[in-house]
Length: 434
Ligand code: 4AD
Ligand code: MG
Image (cartoon, rainbow, N blue to C red; front, side, top):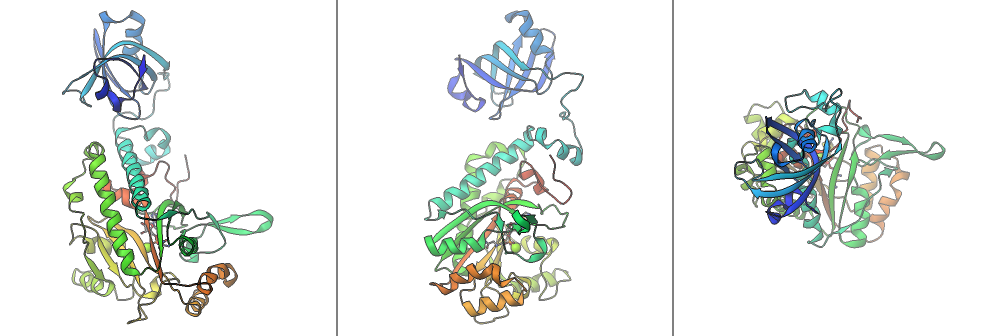
């Protein structure tokens, strides 16, 4: 008998097929029972009728425990009233492993607290909502890759063990390498992207990044995935253009392919349908003025907090780009604005509906002398940056790029409250397990 996935049901109506999955839920009434089987691609409501099945098969199904693994065989028909739109009439079934009722599956369909669920993350990911969020994550990652792959970017992976800080020395995770050598887990692949961009023109890296940030907010992980494009012969304006085009492409893909998941999450998709170019562009100066009018206590020169980002984005129905922050609150590598050297040619993209910063990037310093000076001013160890300075010695050009945190992006697109649900196994201030 042909084994199919639940997602393929529509192509096999009326044929004898086998599904391989787990028991999601079970309703029963005397001579009939309705096991709902999930297989990772969907949920199928099955119908098992006592007098149409061998006695032991019916009894096994009727008394099956939640999340037991099983094979079910039968024919599928369209059924508008069933959860997925189809139903299987069971002709045979085989239990692969029966969950013992003395130690039942710990996550029931009722409510559990977040700590309990996070402790059981290895099982929680089987539930409908988590499943929908992680499928959107998959779509976002696929769309991001497709966008860069079809726009002339080369994937060039960057290392995770690194000798130097990219985003400030206060958030480094130190690792004991061999023979007492200290290395750090990367905060960003950017510095290496600058090298590969000089070799290939347009590149991107996509991998895990680490920040020892002691912030316990709904926007911070200590380990997160970042996609970072970098372009040679490019400026801040190119970064804005690519970021805008990429976000529109990604949101469009999710709307096209993940309607069912967005429906499970009760996402108001009208709030995603407005995500079209051009995005509003404001300067840091304007942003500070707007924030002060709205009652924020921010002073010129300060960085935006989460509440400020929410206040700024609430005026727009699509992401907003804020550029030219004071250099003093930005990383060492930003090219200064030629008109006002106290400003950095950097941009942050803030998602609408209070989801905050999803992208940070900008134009890099390409002048050797200035970069050497910044490395000194930021008290960075010059020997760790010698290779990086070579990029300014051998054919230096204006270049620019950005980084988008995948979990921040997925949190916004799915419309959920906390980014810990957007990664299969979140790592946070007080959580390194399971
Ligand atoms: O703004 P950030 O720190 O920029 C960089 O790392 C640049 N070197 C990127 C580049 O230009 N190549 O981080 C970029 C993005 C943020 O906008 C945010 O989406 C995400 O990374 N991010 C985090 N996501 C989850 N948890 C954290 N602790 C994050 N810190 C940054
Ligand atoms: Mg940033």
